[in-house]
Image 1 (cartoon, one colour):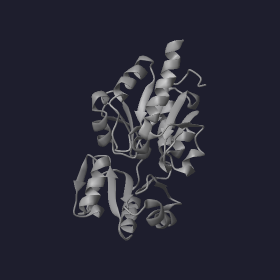
Image 2 (cartoon, one colour):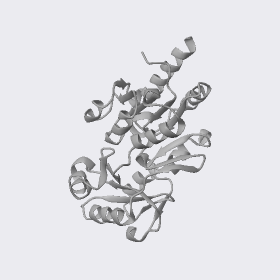
Image 3 (cartoon, helix red, strand yellow):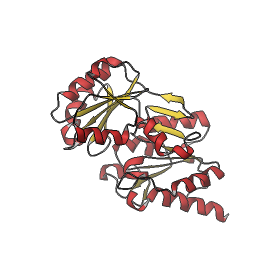
Image 4 (cartoon, one colour):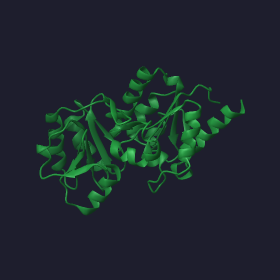
Length: 270
């Protein structure tokens, strides 16, 4: 049984809080109000862009803490409270190599916007699911912004088609992580959802023992390690489940909401 000391909950989005169709259960907002009444903070922690998360959670966006772009940007009330950037030269080197891999589509992620140069309709449709603020540019190598991530899409699989070459070239200097079946992210070597959560733990004064997290893929590993109450989804990648202390029902069953509601119910009984 959980200790009744949870002060902060973070959940990944795709494959975790969202259902198999990428939708947020409307009942989440009732749950969010219950959490507020107990003074428990909730934060979406996602590879998605801040502007995408803000749109999804628009009814409560003004006071929610958003851990965006795999922990490289943390925002609250429209204000940046933490970021982890990549120097421009490194970001552009990643872009160059990624574009040399057949079948890839590259998203250069800045603080102001995401940037793409692909003309592929199916790729643009996939990209817009996660990047609501996204500009089409003529050349990714001439973008003016502070860069937090390079996201690389390959419809035939990121783990096999992108990861080997990108990790070989940049794995010693940057963080290269398979974030879903078709996405790979390249970030600052110290960046992760877990690093962002540890920053919040220090800033807001709660501990790992007072933290609950939910995830399903490799970009969630550090987040799971940053909390005592770490949950891998039943649908999580098998390689990720070893990093969690507990298992939640699948995202198809609203597993995140189920676990949190059960915890709140135990508090209400006392």
